Image (cartoon, rainbow, N blue to C red; front, side, top):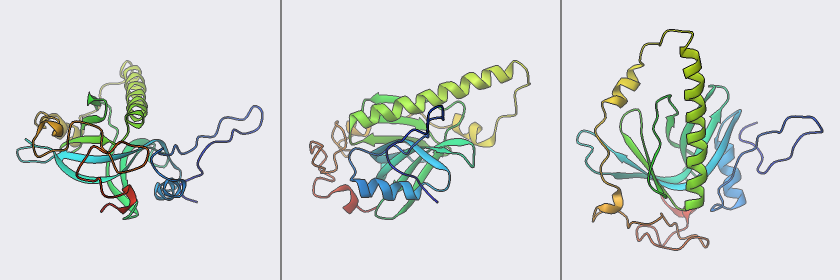
Length: 217
């Protein structure tokens, strides 16, 4: 069985609370359910939001490039015993992009709706459609980073530090972040992403004519 149900129903008295997938408030129920089915076996999304993904691509990494539009999930992947930021395309019905949460990841919020962090190969930015979803997503990611760092700090008191993985060395050599895409004349306006949904004010001319599920993945 893949994905999982929406909402939550606690177990019997004394039973531990069962974690449930957290939906996006901007998606319809059937869209959220389809998203949950893409998560995979024993994977849960702890926070879900509608976003545009921007990457500062090499070699220069001087500008943000819009790569995808979809639903971003902060996924607890139980088989891999790790957490991931994963972007899914509902129209494509597949995973579009992912970044595993690593120990020294710094999740920054240049604006309430535009969040950045260093990926394995380049800097990444998430442009959120809804600031409440952005805030909830940030809170979950930063909480897990803090807990992981605290746990590893305790382990380091007893064990020597492991060698630095090759991908972490690569992250350390990434160029600095380019300006927020709203600062470029060619980028989206300085404001939350809008997908033309009834619950969101339309501010982004790139996507005012389509609902989320009708956008190209």
